[in-house]
Image 1 (cartoon, rainbow, N blue to C red):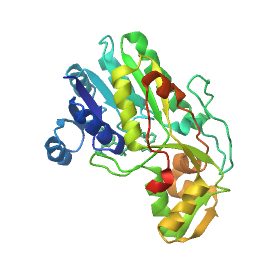
Image 2 (spheres, helix red, strand yellow):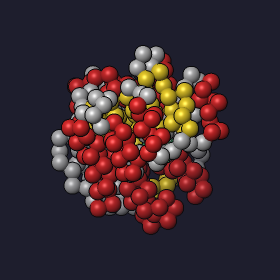
Image 3 (cartoon, rainbow, N blue to C red):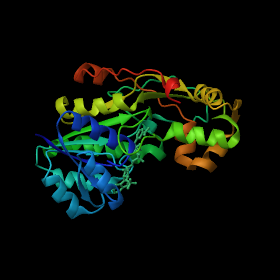
Image 4 (cartoon, helix red, strand yellow):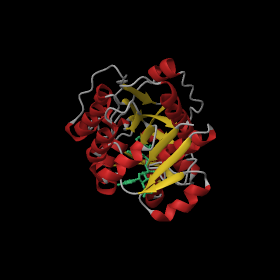
Length: 294
Ligand SMILES: NC(=O)c1ccc[n+]([C@@H]2O[C@H](COP(=O)([O-])OP(=O)(O)OC[C@H]3O[C@@H](n4cnc5c(N)ncnc54)[C@H](OP(=O)(O)O)[C@@H]3O)[C@@H](O)[C@H]2O)c1
């Protein structure tokens, strides 16, 4: 049986990937920083190690005891944790699956539409604010040269109910709460900006396929559909019986969600295509309507 170490296992993506792996008889160990979650995880059949992704010695021991590592714990922007894992994995032939995020495609578009569709082989020239995220991805991919089977997955806007302890994603629940506070579905600027999206279970299936089939040094973008933020706001208005959707300034988004969330999470475009995962890994996502999960 393959032993997989997962970080962020109490979280939305990590918990769902863990469930899919348990269903396929993998032995799953979660790195958990809060002891309060241990009992609940162990009752699901997940072994636990208590600790933090910033504890180098602990990471080394945890990695030595695993066949593969899936790193989701606030992973996308944390170079310190990535460095700990690469160092611990160097020369091991082991698999390292790293979770990034598709805000790397975004500009400061302030709600205006851009139709550019990113593919994995198109060179990225990220804005300054997203440059470190792209550097981290490249560092992980290059670690394939250090005898690590490293794979980067770049999820877009993930929706649907998680299968682990945390049921909710990031963007849609945050927009729903903000919209309820304002009494109407909210979008920013023109709201014509578009994000690719995908269902959490399809994403977790992609992790399983990547673990089983991907070549070291591969990056996969993950999407199965797209929606403008204005469309999402309109669905929120209807679903939660709010006033008709309306626009706020991007500055309101920045004030409420911080600059990364405001400019990139809700007012940028992030559109990509995942033909590569479909072709190379025979990934067959089945959900294709974010509107049904708002
Ligand atoms: N959800 C999306 O739509 C989406 C889309 C694209 C990319 N991503 C990226 O995917 C990654 C995971 O996202 P998610 O939605 O699963 O997030 P999440 O539900 O907020 O989960 C984050 C997880 O990381 C753990 N964690 C954070 N800091 C840690 C530390 N220092 N040591 C140990 N564990 C730590 C948390 O543990 P606690 O339970 O102790 O807090 C939690 O288990 C993030 O990098 C995110 O940016 C997410």
